[in-house]
Structure formats: C-alpha cells, structure tokens
Image 1: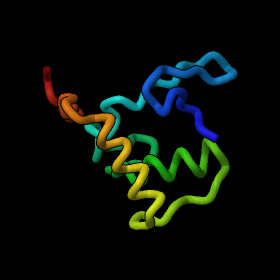
Image 2: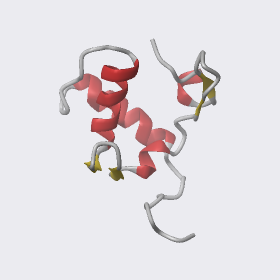
Image 3: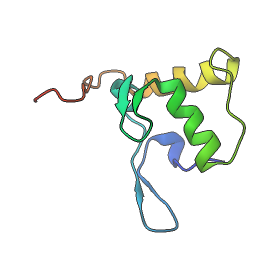
Length: 90
C-alpha cells in the first residue's frame, strides 16, 4: 500500500482532498530540518515516519534491504534534479 501513485512519479490525493506531491526530486531535499520534530531528519527517518504514521506499519531498519531499496529508488527519482537547501535563496 502507498499514498504515492504511479511509483511516486505522479501527484496523488488523500481522501480529504489534500494533494500528495510526486516523489520526483524528494531525496534532493534531505537531510532537512523538521519543525514538528524539532530536529534535522534524514530521508530514512522520513520514510519511516510515512510507514509508521500514514500507513500504520512497522518502521524499517535504517540499514536493512527494504530501506536501502526505498532510498535507492527515491534517490534515482531525484537524479538530475536540483538540490533544495532549506533557507537558501534561489
């Protein structure tokens, strides 16, 4: 199960009508400061947050094969996309 349609390549929508962005370029935004968490989070931490909170699943080991596969896929979706630094003017 996933909230991201088309393998994360297209925008989705929650039943509430809230838009879910595609995952293209997402890996290029990590690590980043998460105001809600009050700390810098990594891509692995974000993946586990989505699994635990949105999907009500069990978090993955940060160095396990499933996490490595997900991070590799997300990184591939970011190939050629600009790195987005928080607070940097564009």
